[in-house]
Amino acid sequence: NNTNNTNNSFPIPKIIHTSFKTYESIPKEYNEIFKSWKKTNPDWEVKFYSYKDNEILVKKNFPWLYDTYKNFYFDEQRLDMAKACYLYLYGGLYVDVNYLPLANIDPLFNKSNDELYFAYNNNNNNTQNTIVTSFMASKPKISFWLSYLKNIIGDKGFIFSTKYGIINSTTGSKKITNLVKSYNGTVGKLPYNDINSCTECNENCNQSFYFHVINNGNINGNFISDIDVVLFKFIYCFLKKNWFIITFTLVISIIVFFVYLWMTYKTFLMIPSFLFFIYKKMIKKFDGLIDNVKKDIGDNVDNLSHFIKKSSPKQYKKKEKRE
Image (cartoon, rainbow, N blue to C red; front, side, top):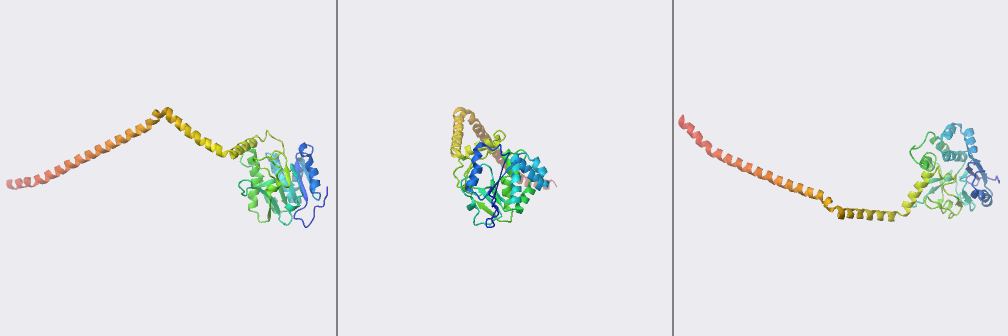
């Protein structure tokens, strides 16, 4: 490897960090990746770490994190922690092992001097979404990474979430994105579409300028353990691609359903309306009866008052004569 990675004019050390379970277990389709790094980026030093190397790094340099590292549910969480450790200690670029370089990556960082570099997955309506943790760069000893490492201690996520949900919220994209929002240092934004043209629903990953991403989203090959992610992805993408047809079909189905009910059970369906009609009639008649009673009572009261007024003087005069 060429170790000329301390060029002071370049914003970050020219070190590429990448990691997998073991070097021997790297899938065969990734064999050309390391050769391509040397061909397209000869002045960058590529460092590969096994998961065992990552554990040793954490235990040696961040002993206060080791219990958290060991107690994570998933290897992906441990890998996320290791990424931050490497970028804090050495700086440079972390990139997932399935990124096949197609061109020299220097232009991504030229004419800039930021402390951190992130690509934002902005494929959803061109709005800024979340940071992509598969491609991150940094100067060494940046305080952001220490803040991140401290923040993930004790964060076990929502236990009833999916595997992806737990990883994303405890160590992954969501965690880093939220912390970057409150970071006071300088952050450079990398062009996501030039790095990774993949999306949740588009596995055609060979359209970006700098990289071809191989086997996107499943670099560990753990299909069975990731069945929740696969199922969610299938449902989400199906709904996203066919939302108009699904909505139209649903509306038509509801209309047909109610027409069928009306045609088949219209007598039955009319019963509530009939009962309501009877109820209104009864109320109307009852109100009329009350009005008539009130009128009769009022007339009787008026007649009684009139009678009393006429009879009272005569009775008074009779009493005077007797006296």
